[in-house]
Length: 413
Image (cartoon, rainbow, N blue to C red; front, top):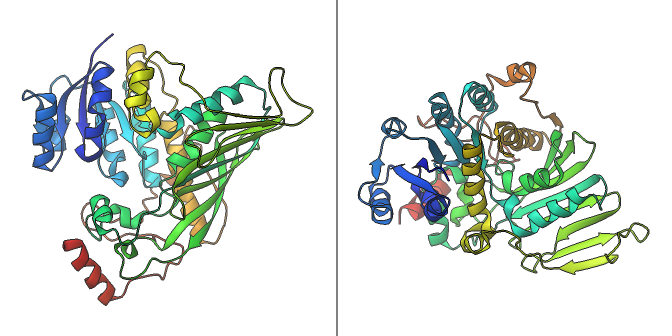
């Protein structure tokens, strides 16, 4: 098995992948982070010979670097991915591919010119129940997909200041400016992975409910969720949430076909419910089937040790196998930018109370040209420039000067 020389950019999340990279015969030769303590910890874990950088410019020029894992801030992946692709360095990008439409166009163009591969590090499709749903759906017993649901719900205790500050340490942090639609991958990617359906038109409605003004979460969006409807290229329809924050925590997915449906049952730690029409029951099945799926994989022990239900292991194995076999990943640049476009454009729909938007096909240069200069963003720029889009559905929702001063004081404590 060929060893691949790996570099990791961003060790807050990236450090959790050390073991998964190593067991898949990846050689971590360089890391990059602005936090010197994280660099020191990386050397303790990976050895004193590890090259540690605080500058991406130096990191990307590390001798012999073959692949980079981008684990930096959510909204800043595209420009670094493009830099790597231009140097023919393979890219694995965590969370989302791009946060403006123009970045999506630029990323596609760079990937098409590069000799390297691009893959989105989306782990939720690889959870055990989602892989089982893909197996059943691709087996054909459900018939063609007609409707599917994907829900990623991750609420936080608004008064748990320590937990909040651990992931959003200051008021202008990107998480506080993250619209509910943008973090779309955990709800949408499993449905696309299971069915092969691709969104072509979206609309969205907000669930608006501001947090208490004395809570650190008041610094973020006042939307608790966004309910997004996707019309797909095969005439099926998806309903997904993006990243929701209502009671109670959990992830759930449902695939409804012509003959039956399959879902992971809420509150059962991954149990599957598979149901058929009474006149469409396959041989060897019941009309209603409840069961816990099992891993049928040679790396079962490694999978069960990995984070996110084994998903963190699968993304690394898939990425490295694609490099070694010169294969195109399932979650390639087109898959990734389609999901990002759903997140970006459904937020615009939400701001307009459900006006539908067509999702561009970035295989088409005609569609790319429509968006190549679209740089609208709800985030602060790396240069400190102000957001150019509201972060929630009520565009006039703003904190008072007194509330801002109070929250800044809380963040600083």
